[in-house]
Length: 598
Image (cartoon, rainbow, N blue to C red; front, side):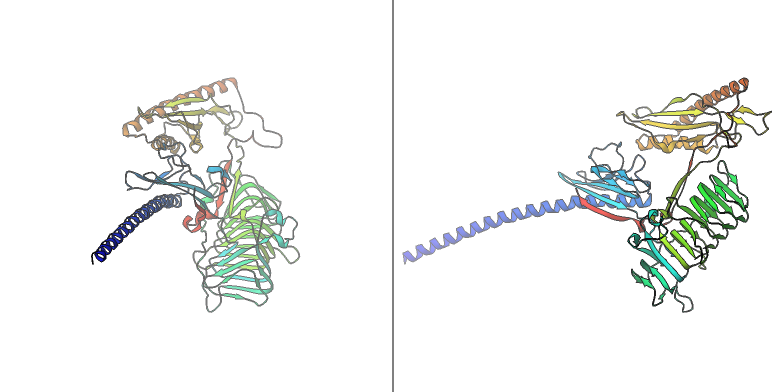
């Protein structure tokens, strides 16, 4: 009996020991598991912080595509605990205690730029480098954004009708068109889009003809009708969503008041447009039109016989007709914008050609025509339409974003004299700011020839700029300096308090101080205004002394170069650009190309 009891006690002790061991092992495993789960949870938390910073940065870029191109481009997720941080910085000169990698905004540039970590950012892209931190945990994310060019080669607010022989496709570049015939291997998918509903039982898109080929997709808000012989290599999407259509405000491109404006008259001879040009009323050009980095604005109708070629822009408020001529395969693209109906037509014997962007605010038609670029028709009244007959529409990516420099010609009475010596001003800043501002500025006399050679003289003209080339050079307390070129400009007599350039200079200085977190108040603004007013008067006095010297010496501007009518250019080149993407919501365009942890 005692032996049995002893065995029982031993068994109980053994089982108890085993249970205790199991308990401690289980507790240890649970502790390890909880630690692992806790680590993973914290890891996910810092990633969530970094992703929140990315989302905030994208929202700022969508709201303002220039965000990050100027100093002060930093975003930080608000409301976090003291040991947590989440942010993105585009400003390499800003204080950076968190060690944020510097992001790069290249959304509005047409060239590739160097990004962080050896990356090369293509045009219209952005590199966002975000940091999420909690305690000792860190998470860094790299996100590459890209805004593709306007995707449609034929887009219309109204019905689309195609007939005869037709090719709708995209090509890789102008070189593919140089030979006149496009090789099959150079064709790429394009897209034809219609935002019109069916009317009276008639489909909004009708492709009728035995020689119609669309390399790419056809989409329409309404129905789509295709003849049996029509070939569409992509998708056919009827009852689809609307395509984004730009509504271009043509009056914004009026050349009235531009420097060196040239008035163009109707002519039967070839006409070249090399500067800002204008015509009021109907304009008829019977010998063709060649654009040489020029802009022609016609406030009326335009008829061109002999085609349009070259690089530049033609803006017409009324109807436009272009017949014959033109060329394909060059590196030049042009914008042809018409507020009314627009027609490009050739003949069965000789097609008309145009290379670039074609836009109509009413109706758009091509007949026996080759268009390398894109066609957009957007009639806000809903009456617009597109008609393509015996034509080729070959999309060029370059045609959706056109930009070039216009060199205005010199005119009598423009700047002709050397500038006064360069003046260097140290702009006063609030005490203790740690920032220095230097302003470089020069003055130019004016040669007035309006009364003829007998009365021509140098002067300081009150109504035209007599102070130019003002540039701010900013330096912070660490000795780092930069030159924001966007403050470059011209300023008239500074004492004119209503002058917009005067206000721009003040605003530029105040913005620089704001970006450096330097507080300013009304007293400082008044001090700044008084200082700049006094310094500007010093420069005006220098210009006046230069004027007196030139008049006393009888100095005249240089004689015109052979074959010209003026003494050379007196204006800086001016940029002209039209990007269809700017008329679209950025949030509808932006694409995420890459999202990774680094």
